Length: 261
Length: 96
Image 1 (tube, rainbow over the protein chains, first blue to last red):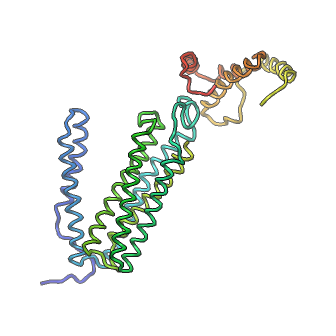
Image 2 (cartoon, rainbow over the protein chains, first blue to last red; image 1 turned 90 degrees about the horizontal axis):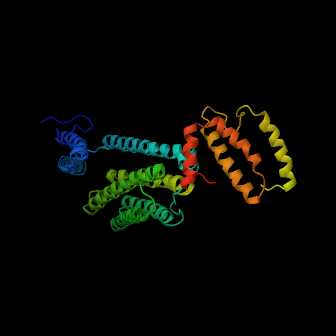
Image 3 (cartoon, chains in turn blue, red; image 1 turned 180 degrees about the vertical axis):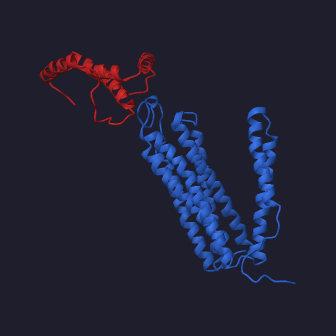
Protein backbone atom coordinates (compact mmCIF):
# COMPACT_ATOMS: atom_id res chain seq x y z
CA UNK A 1 0.00 0.00 0.00
CA UNK A 2 1.51 3.40 -1.00
CA UNK A 3 1.91 6.14 1.59
CA UNK A 4 1.98 9.85 0.81
CA UNK A 5 5.50 11.31 0.96
CA UNK A 6 4.30 14.80 1.89
CA UNK A 7 2.44 16.50 4.72
CA UNK A 8 -0.46 17.81 2.67
CA UNK A 9 -4.03 16.58 2.54
CA UNK A 10 -5.25 15.12 -0.75
CA UNK A 11 -8.96 15.14 -0.03
CA UNK A 12 -11.08 12.13 -1.02
CA UNK A 13 -13.77 12.73 -3.66
CA UNK A 14 -16.79 14.33 -2.07
CA UNK A 15 -20.33 15.07 -3.27
CA UNK A 16 -20.77 18.15 -1.08
CA UNK A 17 -19.40 20.78 -3.46
CA UNK A 18 -21.92 19.58 -6.05
CA UNK A 19 -24.84 19.51 -3.61
CA UNK A 20 -23.78 22.97 -2.42
CA UNK A 21 -23.79 24.30 -5.97
CA UNK A 22 -27.20 22.73 -6.61
CA UNK A 23 -28.46 24.28 -3.39
CA UNK A 24 -27.24 27.68 -4.56
CA UNK A 25 -29.04 27.21 -7.88
CA UNK A 26 -32.28 26.10 -6.21
CA UNK A 27 -32.21 28.96 -3.71
CA UNK A 28 -31.62 31.67 -6.30
CA UNK A 29 -34.12 30.39 -8.84
CA UNK A 30 -36.44 29.58 -5.94
CA UNK A 31 -36.25 33.21 -4.89
CA UNK A 32 -37.30 34.30 -8.38
CA UNK A 33 -40.15 31.75 -8.40
CA UNK A 34 -41.29 33.05 -5.03
CA UNK A 35 -41.32 36.65 -6.28
CA UNK A 36 -43.23 35.91 -9.46
CA UNK A 37 -45.40 32.87 -8.72
CA UNK A 38 -45.89 32.99 -4.93
CA UNK A 39 -44.48 29.49 -4.35
CA UNK A 40 -41.73 28.90 -1.78
CA UNK A 41 -41.23 25.19 -2.57
CA UNK A 42 -38.11 25.49 -4.71
CA UNK A 43 -36.43 27.93 -2.36
CA UNK A 44 -37.22 25.77 0.68
CA UNK A 45 -35.79 22.75 -1.11
CA UNK A 46 -32.63 24.72 -1.81
CA UNK A 47 -32.41 25.80 1.82
CA UNK A 48 -32.74 22.24 3.09
CA UNK A 49 -30.09 21.07 0.63
CA UNK A 50 -27.82 23.90 1.79
CA UNK A 51 -28.21 22.95 5.45
CA UNK A 52 -27.54 19.28 4.66
CA UNK A 53 -24.47 20.23 2.62
CA UNK A 54 -23.04 22.39 5.39
CA UNK A 55 -23.67 19.77 8.04
CA UNK A 56 -22.11 16.92 6.09
CA UNK A 57 -19.20 18.87 4.60
CA UNK A 58 -18.08 20.27 7.92
CA UNK A 59 -18.72 16.92 9.63
CA UNK A 60 -16.36 15.36 7.08
CA UNK A 61 -13.70 18.01 7.76
CA UNK A 62 -13.91 17.23 11.47
CA UNK A 63 -13.58 13.51 10.68
CA UNK A 64 -10.55 14.15 8.43
CA UNK A 65 -8.83 16.47 10.90
CA UNK A 66 -9.72 15.39 14.40
CA UNK A 67 -10.24 11.66 13.88
CA UNK A 68 -7.95 10.82 10.94
CA UNK A 69 -5.08 13.23 11.65
CA UNK A 70 -4.93 14.83 8.19
CA UNK A 71 -4.57 18.38 9.58
CA UNK A 72 -0.78 18.53 9.84
CA UNK A 73 0.89 21.92 10.52
CA UNK A 74 1.10 22.91 6.84
CA UNK A 75 -2.53 21.91 6.33
CA UNK A 76 -3.54 23.93 9.36
CA UNK A 77 -1.60 26.90 7.97
CA UNK A 78 -3.65 26.65 4.79
CA UNK A 79 -6.85 26.60 6.83
CA UNK A 80 -5.69 29.70 8.70
CA UNK A 81 -5.03 31.54 5.44
CA UNK A 82 -8.45 30.45 4.26
CA UNK A 83 -10.26 31.77 7.30
CA UNK A 84 -8.35 35.05 7.20
CA UNK A 85 -9.15 35.53 3.52
CA UNK A 86 -12.80 34.73 4.13
CA UNK A 87 -13.06 37.23 6.98
CA UNK A 88 -11.31 39.80 4.78
CA UNK A 89 -13.94 39.28 2.10
CA UNK A 90 -16.62 39.86 4.75
CA UNK A 91 -14.90 43.09 5.76
CA UNK A 92 -15.29 44.29 2.18
CA UNK A 93 -18.91 43.18 2.22
CA UNK A 94 -19.64 45.44 5.19
CA UNK A 95 -17.49 48.21 3.76
CA UNK A 96 -20.04 48.52 0.97
CA UNK A 97 -22.89 49.12 3.37
CA UNK A 98 -20.87 51.65 5.31
CA UNK A 99 -20.13 53.38 2.02
CA UNK A 100 -23.83 53.54 1.28
CA UNK A 101 -24.54 54.97 4.73
CA UNK A 102 -21.89 57.68 4.52
CA UNK A 103 -22.83 58.56 0.93
CA UNK A 104 -26.36 59.37 2.00
CA UNK A 105 -25.69 60.85 5.43
CA UNK A 106 -22.74 63.16 4.67
CA UNK A 107 -24.66 65.09 1.98
CA UNK A 108 -28.36 64.71 2.78
CA UNK A 109 -30.58 65.61 -0.19
CA UNK A 110 -33.43 68.16 -0.26
CA UNK A 111 -35.92 65.28 -0.22
CA UNK A 112 -34.68 64.45 3.29
CA UNK A 113 -34.83 68.09 4.36
CA UNK A 114 -31.10 68.63 3.83
CA UNK A 115 -30.38 67.16 7.26
CA UNK A 116 -29.42 63.88 8.91
CA UNK A 117 -31.32 62.20 10.51
CA UNK A 118 -33.87 63.10 7.84
CA UNK A 119 -36.98 65.12 8.73
CA UNK A 120 -39.54 62.90 10.44
CA UNK A 121 -37.08 60.25 11.62
CA UNK A 122 -36.63 59.79 15.37
CA UNK A 123 -33.42 57.79 15.72
CA UNK A 124 -32.81 55.35 18.57
CA UNK A 125 -31.05 56.81 21.60
CA UNK A 126 -27.48 55.55 21.30
CA UNK A 127 -27.06 55.55 25.06
CA UNK A 128 -29.88 53.13 25.75
CA UNK A 129 -30.13 49.56 24.36
CA UNK A 130 -27.45 50.11 21.68
CA UNK A 131 -24.94 50.96 24.41
CA UNK A 132 -25.94 47.84 26.33
CA UNK A 133 -25.46 45.84 23.15
CA UNK A 134 -21.97 47.27 22.83
CA UNK A 135 -21.15 46.19 26.38
CA UNK A 136 -22.58 42.72 25.74
CA UNK A 137 -20.43 42.14 22.66
CA UNK A 138 -17.29 43.54 24.27
CA UNK A 139 -17.86 41.25 27.25
CA UNK A 140 -18.32 38.31 24.90
CA UNK A 141 -14.94 39.17 23.38
CA UNK A 142 -13.44 38.84 26.83
CA UNK A 143 -15.16 35.53 27.54
CA UNK A 144 -14.11 34.01 24.22
CA UNK A 145 -10.49 34.98 24.98
CA UNK A 146 -10.89 33.39 28.39
CA UNK A 147 -12.17 30.24 26.64
CA UNK A 148 -9.13 30.23 24.35
CA UNK A 149 -6.69 30.46 27.21
CA UNK A 150 -8.59 27.76 29.08
CA UNK A 151 -8.25 25.41 26.12
CA UNK A 152 -4.56 26.18 25.75
CA UNK A 153 -4.00 25.54 29.44
CA UNK A 154 -5.95 22.30 29.44
CA UNK A 155 -8.64 23.70 31.76
CA UNK A 156 -11.57 21.67 30.44
CA UNK A 157 -14.29 22.86 32.80
CA UNK A 158 -13.39 26.54 32.49
CA UNK A 159 -13.21 26.26 28.72
CA UNK A 160 -16.74 24.86 28.66
CA UNK A 161 -18.05 27.52 31.05
CA UNK A 162 -16.47 30.51 29.29
CA UNK A 163 -17.47 29.26 25.84
CA UNK A 164 -21.05 28.72 27.04
CA UNK A 165 -21.06 32.22 28.54
CA UNK A 166 -19.85 33.67 25.24
CA UNK A 167 -22.71 31.98 23.42
CA UNK A 168 -25.24 33.20 26.00
CA UNK A 169 -23.99 36.76 25.55
CA UNK A 170 -24.41 36.29 21.81
CA UNK A 171 -28.01 35.21 22.34
CA UNK A 172 -28.60 38.13 24.69
CA UNK A 173 -27.38 40.54 21.98
CA UNK A 174 -29.65 38.91 19.42
CA UNK A 175 -32.66 39.06 21.76
CA UNK A 176 -32.04 42.72 22.61
CA UNK A 177 -31.59 43.62 18.96
CA UNK A 178 -34.76 41.74 17.99
CA UNK A 179 -36.69 43.71 20.60
CA UNK A 180 -35.15 46.97 19.30
CA UNK A 181 -36.24 46.06 15.77
CA UNK A 182 -39.78 45.38 16.97
CA UNK A 183 -40.02 48.60 18.98
CA UNK A 184 -38.25 50.93 16.55
CA UNK A 185 -40.29 54.00 15.48
CA UNK A 186 -39.03 53.66 11.89
CA UNK A 187 -38.96 50.78 9.39
CA UNK A 188 -36.80 49.66 6.48
CA UNK A 189 -39.26 51.45 4.18
CA UNK A 190 -38.58 54.84 5.76
CA UNK A 191 -36.39 56.34 3.08
CA UNK A 192 -32.66 55.94 2.84
CA UNK A 193 -32.36 56.16 6.64
CA UNK A 194 -34.42 53.02 7.07
CA UNK A 195 -32.64 51.25 4.24
CA UNK A 196 -29.11 51.94 5.47
CA UNK A 197 -29.99 51.27 9.10
CA UNK A 198 -31.75 47.93 8.66
CA UNK A 199 -29.56 46.52 5.89
CA UNK A 200 -26.31 47.27 7.75
CA UNK A 201 -27.52 46.24 11.22
CA UNK A 202 -29.53 43.38 9.74
CA UNK A 203 -26.57 41.77 8.03
CA UNK A 204 -24.59 42.32 11.21
CA UNK A 205 -27.29 40.52 13.22
CA UNK A 206 -27.19 37.64 10.76
CA UNK A 207 -23.44 37.41 11.31
CA UNK A 208 -23.97 37.36 15.07
CA UNK A 209 -26.29 34.39 14.62
CA UNK A 210 -23.78 32.66 12.34
CA UNK A 211 -20.96 33.36 14.79
CA UNK A 212 -23.00 32.10 17.74
CA UNK A 213 -23.75 28.91 15.82
CA UNK A 214 -20.07 28.42 15.02
CA UNK A 215 -19.21 28.88 18.70
CA UNK A 216 -21.98 26.47 19.71
CA UNK A 217 -20.50 23.81 17.44
CA UNK A 218 -17.14 24.44 19.11
CA UNK A 219 -18.78 24.02 22.51
CA UNK A 220 -20.16 20.64 21.51
CA UNK A 221 -16.76 19.63 20.15
CA UNK A 222 -14.98 20.80 23.29
CA UNK A 223 -17.38 18.73 25.41
CA UNK A 224 -16.60 15.73 23.21
CA UNK A 225 -12.83 16.11 23.64
CA UNK A 226 -12.06 17.15 20.06
CA UNK A 227 -9.68 19.98 21.04
CA UNK A 228 -6.19 19.58 22.47
CA UNK A 229 -4.21 22.30 24.15
CA UNK A 230 -1.93 22.50 21.09
CA UNK A 231 -4.45 21.94 18.28
CA UNK A 232 -7.88 23.58 18.23
CA UNK A 233 -8.03 25.52 14.99
CA UNK A 234 -11.80 25.19 14.65
CA UNK A 235 -12.14 27.12 17.88
CA UNK A 236 -9.59 29.72 16.82
CA UNK A 237 -11.45 30.28 13.56
CA UNK A 238 -14.71 30.74 15.49
CA UNK A 239 -13.01 33.16 17.87
CA UNK A 240 -11.56 35.21 14.98
CA UNK A 241 -14.99 35.35 13.38
CA UNK A 242 -16.53 36.41 16.66
CA UNK A 243 -14.02 39.24 17.14
CA UNK A 244 -14.72 40.36 13.57
CA UNK A 245 -18.46 40.52 14.36
CA UNK A 246 -17.69 42.55 17.47
CA UNK A 247 -15.52 45.03 15.53
CA UNK A 248 -18.21 45.47 12.86
CA UNK A 249 -20.67 46.30 15.64
CA UNK A 250 -18.32 48.91 17.06
CA UNK A 251 -18.14 50.61 13.67
CA UNK A 252 -21.93 50.37 13.31
CA UNK A 253 -22.45 51.82 16.75
CA UNK A 254 -20.12 54.77 16.27
CA UNK A 255 -21.23 55.54 12.69
CA UNK A 256 -24.95 54.81 12.51
CA UNK A 257 -26.18 54.86 16.08
CA UNK A 258 -24.03 57.62 17.53
CA UNK A 259 -22.77 59.97 14.77
CA UNK A 260 -25.89 59.26 12.70
CA UNK A 261 -28.25 60.48 15.41
CA UNK B 1 -27.78 86.71 14.88
CA UNK B 2 -29.61 89.82 16.12
CA UNK B 3 -29.51 93.34 14.67
CA UNK B 4 -30.90 96.62 15.98
CA UNK B 5 -33.66 98.35 14.03
CA UNK B 6 -31.31 101.05 12.78
CA UNK B 7 -28.81 98.45 11.59
CA UNK B 8 -31.62 96.72 9.74
CA UNK B 9 -32.60 100.01 8.10
CA UNK B 10 -29.03 100.61 6.86
CA UNK B 11 -28.76 97.03 5.60
CA UNK B 12 -32.07 97.47 3.77
CA UNK B 13 -30.67 100.41 1.83
CA UNK B 14 -27.56 98.37 0.84
CA UNK B 15 -29.75 95.47 -0.19
CA UNK B 16 -31.78 97.76 -2.46
CA UNK B 17 -28.59 98.74 -4.27
CA UNK B 18 -27.52 95.12 -4.62
CA UNK B 19 -30.96 94.14 -5.90
CA UNK B 20 -30.93 96.88 -8.50
CA UNK B 21 -27.55 95.70 -9.83
CA UNK B 22 -28.58 92.02 -9.81
CA UNK B 23 -28.01 90.07 -13.02
CA UNK B 24 -27.65 86.47 -11.91
CA UNK B 25 -26.53 84.46 -8.90
CA UNK B 26 -22.95 85.39 -8.03
CA UNK B 27 -20.23 82.87 -7.19
CA UNK B 28 -20.79 81.49 -3.69
CA UNK B 29 -17.64 80.00 -2.21
CA UNK B 30 -19.77 77.77 0.01
CA UNK B 31 -20.74 75.85 -3.14
CA UNK B 32 -17.62 75.81 -5.33
CA UNK B 33 -18.33 72.67 -7.38
CA UNK B 34 -20.40 71.73 -10.38
CA UNK B 35 -23.30 70.34 -8.36
CA UNK B 36 -25.23 73.46 -7.31
CA UNK B 37 -28.23 71.67 -5.77
CA UNK B 38 -27.27 72.75 -2.27
CA UNK B 39 -26.88 76.36 -3.44
CA UNK B 40 -30.47 76.36 -4.73
CA UNK B 41 -31.77 74.62 -1.60
CA UNK B 42 -29.93 76.87 0.81
CA UNK B 43 -31.18 80.09 -0.78
CA UNK B 44 -34.74 78.80 -1.03
CA UNK B 45 -34.74 77.83 2.61
CA UNK B 46 -32.91 81.03 3.64
CA UNK B 47 -35.53 83.19 1.89
CA UNK B 48 -38.43 81.66 3.79
CA UNK B 49 -36.49 81.58 7.07
CA UNK B 50 -35.57 85.25 6.58
CA UNK B 51 -39.19 86.10 5.83
CA UNK B 52 -40.41 84.23 8.90
CA UNK B 53 -37.81 85.85 11.16
CA UNK B 54 -38.36 89.42 9.95
CA UNK B 55 -42.14 89.00 10.02
CA UNK B 56 -41.87 87.92 13.62
CA UNK B 57 -39.99 91.15 14.38
CA UNK B 58 -42.56 93.18 12.46
CA UNK B 59 -39.84 94.56 10.15
CA UNK B 60 -39.88 95.05 6.37
CA UNK B 61 -38.91 91.77 4.66
CA UNK B 62 -37.29 93.44 1.62
CA UNK B 63 -33.72 92.33 2.54
CA UNK B 64 -34.91 88.75 2.11
CA UNK B 65 -35.47 89.38 -1.60
CA UNK B 66 -31.77 88.73 -2.29
CA UNK B 67 -32.27 85.05 -1.45
CA UNK B 68 -35.38 84.97 -3.60
CA UNK B 69 -33.50 86.39 -6.58
CA UNK B 70 -30.72 83.82 -6.16
CA UNK B 71 -32.98 80.81 -5.87
CA UNK B 72 -35.11 82.00 -8.76
CA UNK B 73 -31.92 82.17 -10.85
CA UNK B 74 -30.57 78.82 -9.79
CA UNK B 75 -33.42 76.43 -9.06
CA UNK B 76 -35.30 74.38 -11.65
CA UNK B 77 -38.90 75.64 -11.82
CA UNK B 78 -40.27 72.17 -11.04
CA UNK B 79 -38.36 72.12 -7.75
CA UNK B 80 -39.72 75.55 -6.77
CA UNK B 81 -43.26 74.47 -7.62
CA UNK B 82 -42.86 71.20 -5.72
CA UNK B 83 -41.43 72.90 -2.63
CA UNK B 84 -44.07 75.67 -2.71
CA UNK B 85 -46.81 73.02 -2.80
CA UNK B 86 -45.14 71.13 0.05
CA UNK B 87 -44.97 74.29 2.14
CA UNK B 88 -48.68 74.89 1.57
CA UNK B 89 -49.48 71.27 2.50
CA UNK B 90 -47.24 71.41 5.55
CA UNK B 91 -45.06 68.60 4.20
CA UNK B 92 -41.96 70.59 3.30
CA UNK B 93 -39.04 68.57 4.77
CA UNK B 94 -36.77 71.57 5.39
CA UNK B 95 -36.70 73.48 8.65
CA UNK B 96 -38.17 76.98 8.24
